[in-house]
Amino acid sequence: MSTTTTASPNEAKLWGGGKSPFNSEYGKVMMWYFLMSDAFTFGAFLISYGTVRFSTNGWPNSNEVFKSFPFAPEGVNAPLVFVSIMTFILIISSVTMVLAVHAGKNMDKQGVVRNMILTIIGGIAFLSCQAWEWNHLFHEGAWWGANPFLNADGTASTTNFTNFFFTITGFHGFHVFSGVVINIIMLIMTLMDKFEQRGHYLMIEKAGLYWHFVDLVWVFVFTIFYLL
Amino acid sequence: MSHSHTDQEAHNAEAMAEIKKVTIILSVFTIVELILGFWMISLTSEALILAIKGTIVILMMAKAFYIVAYFMHLKHEVKNLIMTIVVPLSLFVWFIGAFLWDGSSFRDLRNKYNPYFKEQSTIKGARSS
Image (cartoon, rainbow over all chains, first blue to last red; front, side, top):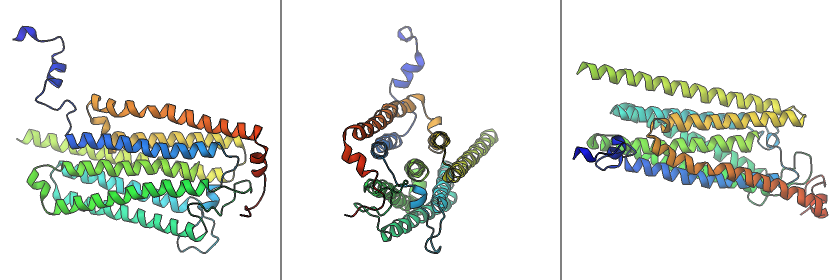
């Protein structure tokens, strides 16, 4: 009966059933909530790093610790150079992921395949850079429970710095690794025409959300560990 | 229908322009962050370093906004969905403020009441153990 219609017909229609109130697919909404919970995990890690750093008198200078570069002679002083390359690799791979999602919306299989391959290459390049950096630091004597670096003022340092560095970049690197695996699965599914059969490339969008989140976390990890 | 086809093309061009714009913004912000980082190495003034660090944090937040809003498309979602994600994340305002304050307070208290802690942080060179 039309006389029983409430004052806000739009709202009644939105939540009245028969259509998605968030105008988004279930899996995508759930991916958002997963990423929100993951943001709290990373947030807790980074905030505990900040709390411990604020409660300590001295802290190593990141420009002293991260001054090396692959294939450069030992003792080279190139702070921020290598990590800026890693940052740009991740930004570029994020852009190619956006382009893959965009191609998916247009049902452009070739575009999806091309950009997914570029994104996977970017992810593997980032992981390789991180593997080199970890390996280099390990050979300098840095590891969980071992810190060869002095504080910026020349005083003795605790192992807090290396513990946090390896835990947080390790957890982020594990996310990158999972992202690469997910992207490879998406690429295989695309090549097998799975999404053409379904009639949509929503899975690419969900993988894209995860990949952008990995890039987002790196923005914070990069700034907090290498710049501040 | 040719009309909807051109609509689609216009929408595509718009989306590509947005991707391009956000890519440039992210790159420029990162380059500015790196320039500030390099500049900071040679500085000694505590106040200036703090100001630069503040600027870097603001740039970091701006980059995070552009990634979430445009690359992750959150800006184009329904408002209710945005709110269910952004409102819980506002917990971070308390989370960061409270914990950094607590860390700083812990350091002050230890320096005041724990002479061993204070002495340990004045010893130069690597620890013997």
